[in-house]
Image (cartoon, rainbow, N blue to C red):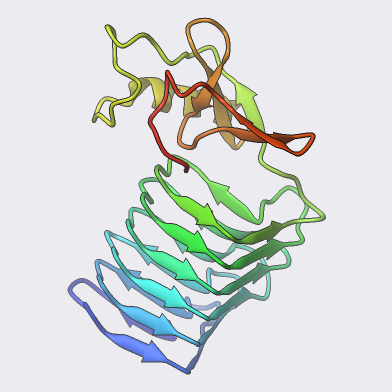
Length: 231
């Protein structure tokens, strides 16, 4: 890796730098964090080739990337989070012309992308892709993939139930219905599951809230069968 921070590498600061990865060997990302918390990266360039330019895994939490450029020349993902929580990317440019721009994988929760541009130009890929990643926030950002597709939803048979069975407004450890919905959507080739309430109306998605813009208005569910918030 250009920079590798392994378990216990915490609260370091890097700024005004150019970090380049390569495509041979292991941990070849421009920036690789595993089990590293609270680090800050400002006004820097991260350049990858075939592997993610920025790769956070193994419980790398509360790291911050600000005012930076994250790019990859081909394939893979420009930015990749796995099992890493509460990280922030703000005021940054994330680009991958032939794959995913930002990919938030399993158990990448409570992360924030704000005031940033996330772009891809690959058919069959997404500029921003989430799978089994919960309570993440994207605000004030520009996300585009003119050659690919928007978010693909699949309406699943698993529903958000009544509170006397499992209160859908509680953030509990029991997420079997959401996991089952996610599996069904994935098997159908979708990015996310659209879950209905007991009455057949839209409730939420399996890991995000559901919003749609219709004739200048923002529509969402009643909120009776999902967590409160905007994710």
